[in-house]
Length: 177
Image (tube, rainbow, N blue to C red; front, side, top):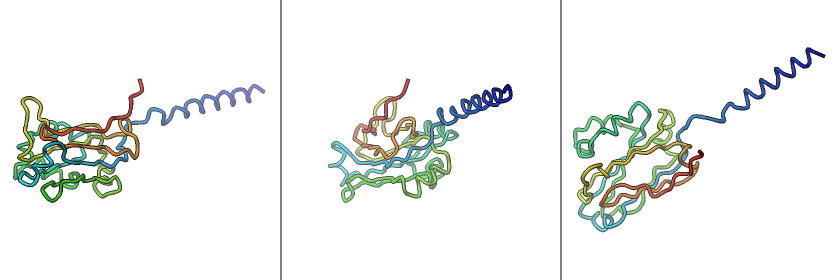
């Protein structure tokens, strides 16, 4: 009888210990389409002032590189940071003929590479003569987490590039306290 009590106690402890596995999982890349579009007065200016928008998947080791690069240096023709982004980068070009939204699909090649490389953030940089950099923080660059902690799976993340800079128009999911 005593052996059954010991076995029962061990089983209860084992089940209790295993039940916590997965409850506090680490954030991982969320499965979301990212929709980028020009907005505001920038849409009317695209014919004469084309716009280029780069989306780069950023893992933990590359955060400082993208946080520290200036937008002007990044879009300079010889930018090592931009060139080194390689397949982790998707570029959208907007002009007088292409003014509508463009989508980085979760089912595409870029997203698959992001999953493979442990991407947790996205850096978005925009360049165009219609953009006006403000004093202080450069609003032509935006970086934010792209994990299941902040976004719902299947959610469409709307990015709007305006004359004043880049904004994310989609609300993140409420954080648990």
